[in-house]
Figure 1 (cartoon, rainbow, N blue to C red):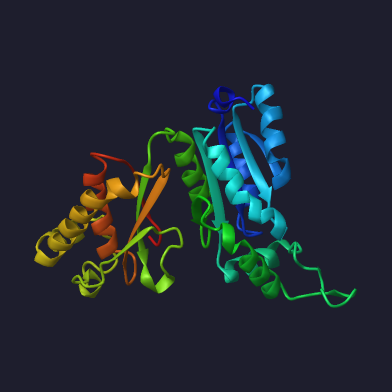
Figure 2 (figure 1 turned 180 degrees about the vertical axis):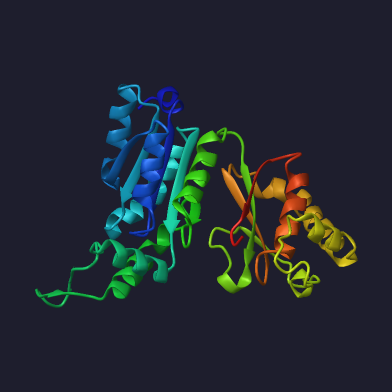
Length: 294
């Protein structure tokens, strides 16, 4: 395929854990006008793109069938090769916790793709547990989990996932999206974090009766924090670090970069820090703000 033809394409390549939301992402992209193909074998990727480009389909979303180990080994070099020809190629790896995946399979009553595996020492078929299927797939996919944007859909509402995907569609191929999000340490560090900052060292409004039920976005909490020297110092320190190092992190043609700031409950300290740091970041970078646990 000629390079000038390829450069006009806008392509999402979606892969990840079974049950993590690949079909949901494809539906979101289809609603946005993308031509979508589900469960495509990696070996057919080049042929499909050539065919669709001849049909003048410029917006394409492909969910890759990544269940064969031999095929998986070719995916990373394949995408690296395509990135040299396609300006706007966004690989997405979807992930979720074992608990969330088990819950989803229990609710839908669908079988996991690995529910029957052939024992290499026997012709008999085994019936592993759902947890074993998930662990087997996770181990197999580990080699490709960093192919592109890693989205953890654990506890994520469909509307939130839709918002994240639409952010990527709007993104200019030459512009990096800086994501800054708050989170609660008690619920775990977001899996898509590139940088993590800990705000648990700051005074906690949770122990103030009149502030406990509020969030870091409320005026009363903002006033409380603005009277705390440590808070302004931490915000300033994080901003200094980002202003110095973010250009280097984004230099290598990254389409996104995710900064996470956490506190115990994810309601006060981390939210305040994210809101104030984001105001400064927006002056120089395309920035998206999220509060995971609000």
